[in-house]
Amino acid sequence: MIVRPYESADIPAMIAIWNEVVEGGIAFPQEETLDEQTGAAFFASQSHCGVAVDEHGCVVGMYILHPNNVGRCGHICNASYAVASAHRGKHIGEALVLDCMAQGKRLGFGVLQFNAVVESNVHARHLYERIGFTQLGVIPKGFRMKDGSYENICPYYIEL
Image (cartoon, rainbow, N blue to C red; front, top):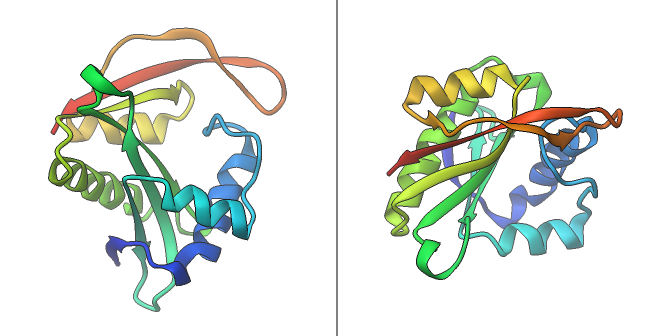
């Protein structure tokens, strides 16, 4: 598996992976899925998008990277990661996060911050902590789950 910058041919697979997470309703704050037009515009608007590609050339995971804020806080970036459910548990997420950190640094960002890691997303949280991210606290009931219940979110950050 390799992680590389996305290409226009990757967009349909990226949309499918992104939409799978959005439709799951337990990790991403977005509620609207992407179509070919909105997906292409969304990915093009990011500072960087990376894709994980398996040995057959199939996109199995992806990430988006963009500023977390503007002006005096513009040196902080934010990212979202998604791995196709059929390929989870293969350390693809770790490869995506590490590539994202390198790209963030290359683009001049000094900090990578995650605003809304859902508390029950233990696999992501363990990965971030293993890599060296610091949890900033807990925001009670900060995320509305697909079923309408609320769950805590845990912001994280790491210096790049």
